[in-house]
Amino acid sequence: GGFDRTIISKFSELMKQIYSALFVLFLFISCKAASQEREIFRMTVLKQYPEMRKRLFDARVSADEKEIYSAILDNVFGNAASSNERIAKILARGGVKFDSLQHSLLETQHSNYVKLFDYKRAYESKKYLMDNYLSYTKEENRFDEEQAMNIWQALQDAPRQEVLHAKEIVSMPMTKDPVLGLQRIPVSKGGKEYSFIFDTGAGISTIMDSMARVLGLSIYDKVPVVIKGGITGLGTNVKLGIADKLNLGGIEVRNVLFLVFPDSALTFKTGPTSVVKVDVILGFPVIKELERITLYADRMEIDNRAQIRKPGPPNMAIEYLKPIIYLEYEGEELPFTFDTGADETVFSEVFYKKHRAIIDKTGKKDVEQYGGAGGIKAFNVMKVPSLSFGCLGTTITLKDAAVSTEVIHTGDDVYYGNVGQDVIQQFKSMTIDFKESRITFNR
Image (cartoon, rainbow, N blue to C red):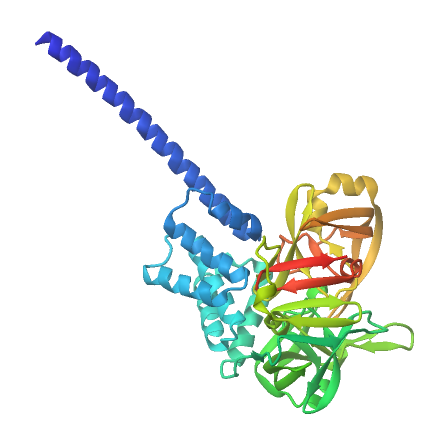
């Protein structure tokens, strides 16, 4: 009997050691998975979507978590309808147990409604978020969120935007405004041709009040809206207008939304007696529906042929109505807002804080003036002799680059700057493929 008890005792001790080892292994795996899930969530906050896309399918996260993050990736990489389908299934199962992730999911759903031009649901979803998740919106951003809600509330009964491609390939002239330095394209309305500024940085197309009357826009002004002017952060009272039909070289765009600004807000002094007017801007909600565009110095080509697309990594995301381009710097992919309506690239205080040592060493203090709807504002900057970045194997170098040392209003504190025309003009052409979420610069 003693022999048996000794064997049983040793066996019992061995099993305890095995169970203990297994428990430690389980805890290690669980902690590692939880850590990876936290890291993936952090990537959504920092807008590191390409890296998140790679990491998600390598990480040991649950099927439910993968479905949630896939819904977010579908949204930013141009698949709003697919994203909403995933979200509907997740919500039908009871949603997400963590409030922060549930908030991200509901924000993604709201963004999908905006991208699909479903204004009624965009309003309802934004109101729900403002009523139930206000604490997740930074105080400095709450005013802008309220104004966005007012826009969708005012447009609840407005028809959705539609784009009708009559031809697979459309080419149209693109000219440079001699005063503003921005690109313009011909747009027809009612048989008459007008020159519109082409601006990926305009979250909604923009127009002066006098020009809105010329184009005969339907006005929606029952809900007051105040818009802060982009990089300057200055506010202006606006109305909303819908153009029933616009024509871009044979492409018909129906029910185009415009922010209608007072003429004074889009009129800028360029000298003691001279002024310049920003009359009408074709913004991102129209541009993103053109599928694949190539911009040359003198023309724009719109190509929606499916067979020309090639698989590859994305380097562009659409955050709400804001295009983001990812540029490689010091071994990292950094998110920048992308604005064809800006004549020069500006690096934000986020970039300055991350690389302050080298910028302070090589740069010189200066002051730059940046304009937006509502006015012009001066910013303290560091002028750096040269900065080089990678973009899908192509090198981009900027001479005398301006790095802001104070906060720039880009809508968030995660973007490293705003890429403008001084990058685009270094190349023969630039292709923006909204189906593949890719921007390529062509020499």
